[in-house]
Amino acid sequence: MSDENNVGEDNETVTGIEAPIYLKYNFTAGAAASRFLTRIKEGVLTGQRCPRCSQVYIPPRGSCAACGVPTEEEVELADKATVESFTIVSIPIPGNPIEPPFVVANLVPDGANISVIHLLSECDNAEVHIGQRVQAVWKPQEEWGYALDNIRYFKPLDEPDVPVERIGKLPVTGLEG
Amino acid sequence: MGQSNMKEIAIVAYQQSDCVSDAGAANEVELIIPVLGKVFEQVGITNAQDVDFVCSGSCDYLQGAAFAFVMGVDALGAVPPIKESHVEMDAAWALYESMLKIRMGHAESALIYGFGKSSPGELPNVLSQQLDPYYLAPLWVDTISLAAMQARLMLDQGLITERDMAEVVARSRRNAQGNPHAQLGGDVSAEDVLAQQTYVSPLRKADICPVSDGASAVVIATVEKAREWGVPYAVISGIDHCIETHNLGVRDLTDSISTRRAAANAGVGDGRVDVAELYAPFSHQEIILSRALELGEDTRVNPSGGVLAGNLMMASGLSRIGEVFNRIVAGEAQRGVAHATSGPCLQHNLVTVLEKGETA
Ligand SMILES: [Zn+2]
Image (cartoon, rainbow over all chains, first blue to last red; front, side, top):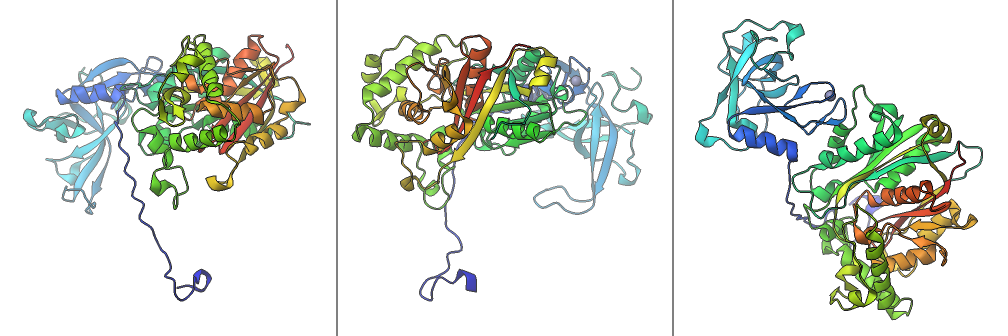
């Protein structure tokens, strides 16, 4: 018992009370996110194009954060992508079932201009590099849900690297398109 | 806030979404974006890049998502970066913060928006968690029960009758027929209201504002900037807010001392009040507020229908200011008072006085 909190010899210092809070919500992801999740359950990656700057966002948030305007046009994307940046995680993350070392990468799917974060695997970690071409490895179709982890990870493709200035600018048809 | 030797600040635009009981799949950004688009259009600007400061009001407890307000920035066009702030309160207080920003000379204009999606949770219970965390919040005393106790005090002391309350509701419903964004409008009489059963006695359901989803937005600017934009405006001639203790037992719940004090500081009594928009979530509270603001027979109270016709949590206070602005620029009023509240039984109150500006 500290001097400044002296509440008398007969009283215990109260250091906490139990006041549990239970609140129930019917949460909604939003119209844009709901649409994205519905399509990824069908094995299709989709984005939304900004009517002002033409950037394609994935996952779509219903607005272009740069322009502040609604994005309504839905765009189908390829499951091929380019590595925009990456990190090799060598320490275990509490609660994360993935064994280190593993690669987390910013990937721009073909047809999109904004990267999504996902895992890279089936690769030599030491050889992962910016501009590398990769493709999604999907879970078996019967396991697909409303989630980005319908894709287990991305793996390297045997395609030439994308020059840095073209990363995030490929059409949905890829490097040759 | 004293008014001398300072740049005059004016409201130049106001927009509000419809008040809907359930906005469905739409998230907060999707509620905000259409309202911001309209308010930018009203001023003739493109996005938040064209104002000097942005401040929003929202509360994560409403939809149960942490830092939900951060997503709101997606609606602004914050590339390149903008000056932005947020209050975990009604956006009327975001307007207050924005005025301070302009007063300090850090901005000439500001966008203020408030939004709330209350339908995902059980609002009266959610709001119980704003009470003091040791004695009241663990008891889950909900906002309707607290307001009912307040109404009971007033009835038992002969300060109001149930008919007085019903007449507030009837006027709200009638006025809301002229408000395209209202949720509950209709040709309802006091007798119709009195014929309803009590819900949380002595309150009937009609005495209680509905739960609504939606957003509203306002643009304010110095009068010089308003003239540069060439838009009609209403000058904010006074604004102040006062808060009472969280200890409900200490407060006189039959009066609103904090509203009286804020009104005196804002200069409500310095001129005729043609119109007043009062944030009264319960019918009897409109009577408390009208008395605290000393409104007379010649003041039109809640011509929009007020929040009994649709209550956008975290936006309704800002909308009250916007509604008075609308009456002034429409030429229906020369001078008006807007009131915003927060907390149980009118704990915290903000009073704004708006006046018609000189024609440019
Ligand atoms: Zn854009």
